[in-house]
Amino acid sequence: MMESSPASSLLPQQHHAYASELLSFPLARLNKEPELLRLHGDRIQSQIQDLMAGNYRALVHAAHTSLSVQDELSSIDKNLKSLTLEKIPELTNACTEFVDTLEKRKKMNQTQHLLEIPQLMETCVWDENYDEALELEAFVRKLSNMHPKLAVVRDLAEQVRKITQSLVSQLLQKLRSDFEKPEAEYCLQIVGYLRRAEVYTEYELRLQFLRCRQAWLTGMLEDLDERNPYEYLKGMISCHRKHLVDIINQCVLVNYDEDDGGLLNSWLMHQVTSHLETLKILLPNISDGVSLSNILEESMYCGMVLGRVIGLDFRGMLPPIFEEAVVNMFSNNVSRAVEGFQLVLDSHRWVLLPAIANSSFGGGGGNDDDDDDDVIEPPYCLMDHPPLAVFVNGVSAAMNELRPCAPLSLKHELSKELIKGLKAVSDYLMTYNATSGILLRENKESELFLSLCLAFIEITYPHCAKCFGRCYPGGAASVMDAKSLCDSIRRLVMTVSPRPKPPIGNRDGNENY
Image 1: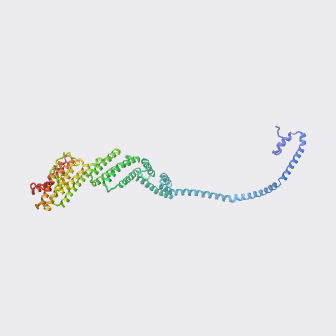
Image 2 (image 1 turned 90 degrees about the horizontal axis):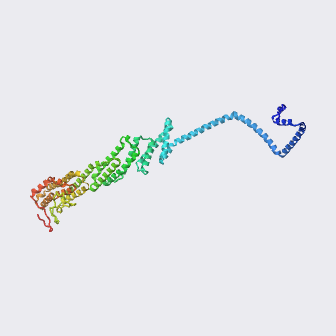
């Protein structure tokens, strides 16, 4: 490549290539170059004229537009100078104010969202969305710890605290009701919510759990019919047998342990004590021996189940309570028999009744405890003495009620109750004679009264002893051994007549003495 000459450096940059080309031409070509350039110029001039003739309108419009643009650019230049000096600071200030207002609006929205937390939480509690409600409560608690001095935060925390109390009350109410969901899942879920609420300590939470389950159990018992002691006790025993085990299993899920200060054990002892106290109060109202026996069997079974499952065997505490109930039942029945005797004797008309076939004073032995007959029928001759017949029927009813539940430990005490009833009959016969003076009349009435007294000594007393011996082997002998308590009536009979012969009826209706 040829190096450029010094002269070419004097030309503009765009002419350097052409200058180089000229320097490479020969002399003949250089002589022709001016003419070629003129011809080329003429051709270009002709093309320009053709172009201007064909685009005249566009060129005129472009010219006008160019002038207009120049004017506008001049105006813009002036306005820009004015804007730079006056409007830019104002625009900057306006933008700054806009940004500040926007930040305030954002903060206002955030504040509004915070102020809506109580309403949102209350809605969650109402809809039982406890997870969301507790998350809101935890957020407000954290906010309160971060900004304890802000009044709005304190007010917000106070509102949330009240709603949390409502949530806790709702959860406790669920613990006071029957569980619809599976027990394990439901217990853990509710107790988990209560723990997250952080309203109670662990000990207080366990105490509240027991109180709620106690309230539910009490409600179950209140639904029972207290007017019927037998049905109430059956329902109570069944309720304790079924639900105490369930409650203990629920307490295990709640993590009761030795650190609870014996809380669970104390509650169980309270349940047993309440159970026994209810038995002690209501059992005296049961006058049916079969019902009493059924209640005893139910109680023993309940104690066995609770002992096997949770170690709460209270069967050893039952005997004294049921023994007292049995004594009370037998004593009341014997007392009713005595009262029936007294009422019939007071209204009795001392006339000779028609003779009963095969009636006699036989069969009055009181020591026949080895009789093989299952049924002991009262002697027919007592039909001649309605007061004694009423008494014997009452004693027989008392024995029938005693047989299904006759504890051996009560043999001596129950024999005393029977003897007390027999002595009451004897004493009332003495009182009746003293107040009515019937033996002083020396007529048919006095003979019938003496016959009744003798029937009591020779027939009624041994028969009652024999009935008692059916319930307790050897019991007849213990009753007969106390026959001396009725010696007063025996002496009365012997004083009036050495041996009055009681009437023995025959088939013709005549009496013999």
